[in-house]
Length: 102
Image (cartoon, rainbow, N blue to C red; front, side, top):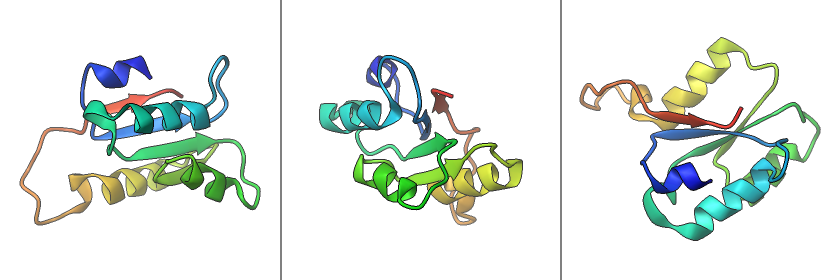
């Protein structure tokens, strides 16, 4: 969570099951703190693939959800969906800066 105060990211991959603070709590704190990454897309990365898990992530302030094991194709789709990498009209940009808790 603290790293989001120091640098703006294009996308945050948030592991939902972490020790000390889970991904849902971390996302809520990032959103509540405001600052550089208050509106940065946060993508849940979780082994939970049960009905209702995606909705729980969205309710916590995450923007999307990907389940483990992560398939490379699906990860690329998510990155393209939430960054300018998915917009053919967007100007060329350097590779997205991605914060990962996974």
